[in-house]
Each structure stands twice: as C-alpha cells, then as structure tokens.
Amino acid sequence: MQRTMKRFLIILVILILTALASSCGIQGKPTGKIGVATTILPVADFIKNVGGDKVEVTVMVPPGANVHTYEPTPGQLKELAQARLYFMVGSGVEFELAWMNKIIQNNKQLEIIDCSRGVQLMAAEQHWHNYNQNAEKENNLGKDPHIWLSPKNAKIMVENICAGLIRIDPPNKDYYTQNKRDYLQKLDELDNSIQESLKGLRNRNFMVFHPAWGYFARDYDLKQIPVELAGKDPSVKDIADLIEQAKKK
Image (cartoon, rainbow, N blue to C red; front, side):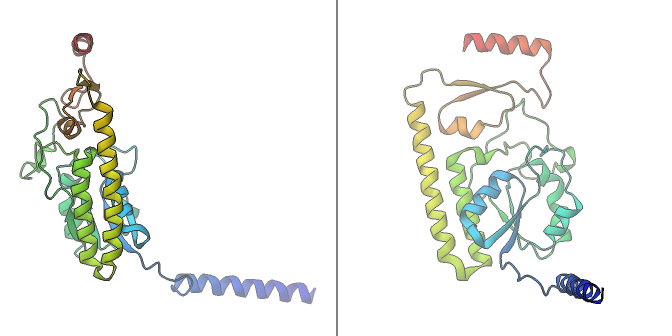
C-alpha cells in the first residue's frame, strides 16, 4: 500500500512540475520562426514557399470563409499580436479595406508589406460585387483584387514577399533568395504550360460564377463571362441571357 502511495505521489509531482514548466515557458524551446500573417490562403502559400521552415504563417480569412464579410476571431488577433510581418494582398480585398487600419493601430510591432506593389491593377468589371461603402477613401476602391490568379502577378508578389522577409531577417537573405528563385521557376513553368495549353484556341470565352479571373484572362487573351451580377445571384431573366450567351459563344 505504501509503495503504491509513494508511486502515486511521484507521478503527481512529475505532473505538477511539467505543468509549471509549461506555464513558465521552461518546457519546449521557442521555435525560432518568424511570425507572419496574411489575409488569404494563396498568399500564405507564396510565403511558405519563400520563407520555408523559418516562418510561421497565420491566415486571417480561412478556407471557405467569405473574404467580404469575415471577422477575425480572438485567437487570430492573439496570433497577430505575436507576429512581426503582415503581408497584405494590397489590391482592394474587402477584408483588408475593413480591417487593416484596426490591425495596424492595435499591433504597432507589425511591419506591413504590400504584395501588390508593382502589379498593374485592373478596374473591376461593372458587374463585380460592390465594395464596402465605408472604405471609399481607399486608393484601390473599384479595382479587381484577384491579382494572385495570374502567374505573372504571382511572380511580382513573390518578389515582394522575399524582400519583406529579407528586411526583417537579413542573416537568412541567401536562404530566402534561393527559395524565391526555385518558386519563380515553378511559376514560369506554370505560365509556359498554360500558354501551351491555350495555343491555337479559337474560342477564347469561358463562363465562371464569380468574375475573379480578369488578370488571368488578360494575360492569356481570354474573355470571362460571369454568372454573378453585382454580387448577387442571377435572376431568371439573367439566367436566360447567360444561356443564350453560352449558345452563341
């Protein structure tokens, strides 16, 4: 009985010490990774390809969430407080129009990198969804924000991401630069593959629900026909018109 009690007490002491070590930060070494945040998953993928195992990425708008209405959770805001960089899309994504000023004001330690720097923004098509009316003063109001869907634009964004990481972590410049080169090569291969696939295509029209492919269509001489009109589902008449367009084109 005494031996059993003694063993129980030893286990209890170990559990208590483990809990104390964890709470005091004794257990487990810091990851050493740079905390970075971004708005959407595609940009997070660019960051991971350049930053590799030296970055920890927080995505503010998770997959499946509506980028036009999403509000960050308390957990995400806590992660932001520990981040050093925020890679904003910069092209007028509605989440950023609504939240970036608040994020900057509440996280003075954050360095903001505009991934759209150097990208020639296109005007949003007239049927594209309306922007937040409270963000009328933003420079990119009325621009098509979907810059990441063009491999050519993606290359510019990757350059901006690499420059941002080097600025905050200069000792690892060579690491980020090599990762960037490797990823740019993949984007070049993708670009070439798309061009080859579309070579000789006479009918350059395609139909899509949300008109997100403006930059892609521009780069590859295509024409998108969107189903969504002014951010709303099409009416019965709109559907009839779309069917007629589909037959003609």
